[in-house]
Length: 231
Image 1 (tube, rainbow, N blue to C red):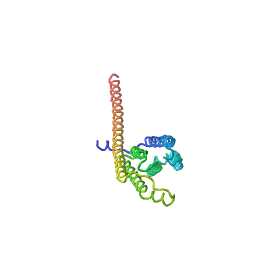
Image 2: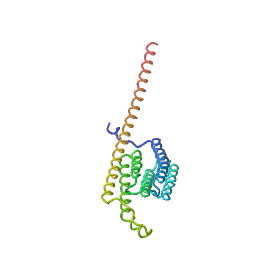
Image 3: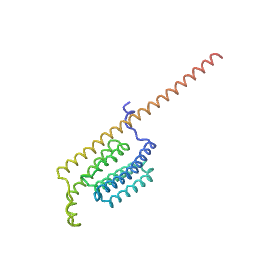
Image 4: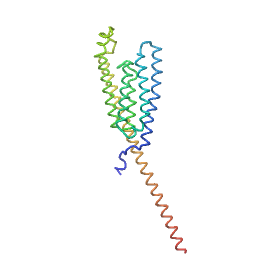
């Protein structure tokens, strides 16, 4: 019974459906980000660096097209899915960088590849993507505080950008990382529970079908026996 309830490998059709869902979500999120950035730019001119932002939008569409063309590969090769999720995390890091880094309003977009990993790879995959996203986010904030001021002053001749105090940045990073890991744990556990429930339901359906076939065989045998006795 325990073996029957243990997680089973995802069926190819189910895996393909979830991969198509992943591609569709990216195709929806990209224009939403574009529209939000334009609204912010109209309300607060200069708050978003439009050239790198539009470059990231184009890169996002290119990744979406590449994933759509490699669906068949991703169905059978786990590394292809891992590469897609890693590219998503790197792309989100780019959006976070151009929208303010530690003060960015899009940092929670990191949860999207985490949830996608939970549906495709379970809790382990979700935690791996959460850890990778956390490392990218920490590296981004460290670079923002340690490298960006010197680069702006030396290369651009501009004053260092205004940043929140370091302790506020540390709290912000800690809260976001906790959110990433929490989402990974919860979504991964939920995905595995749903997968076990699906496996249990499939087994119950098979047992019911077998029982129905056995009952029909018994009825047919009884009917044949009665006909023979009459003769």
